[in-house]
Image (cartoon, rainbow, N blue to C red; front, side, top):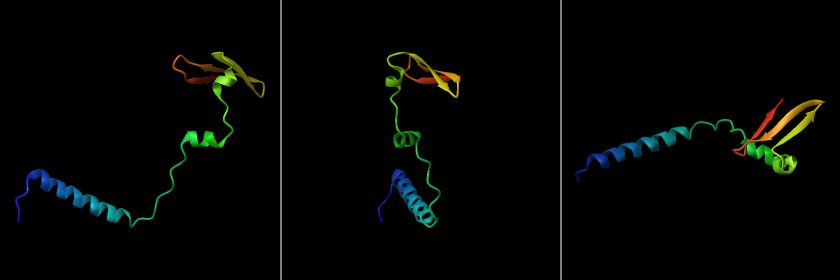
Length: 83
């Protein structure tokens, strides 16, 4: 038997613990699927390019059922929609 240093010994313990965890976790049924990221939903829909919607402006007034909403592109290139 060869002498093992503390790092090698610790590595063996960690490897054993990971193997044990993986064996136990594979016995459980899979959990619910994670929700799709927001961008995946946007891709599935008809995407509208915000810059083409704004037509070179920084602000636009949108109407929904007669109610005005202001869409603005910030200095950090983020969109803000306010009522």
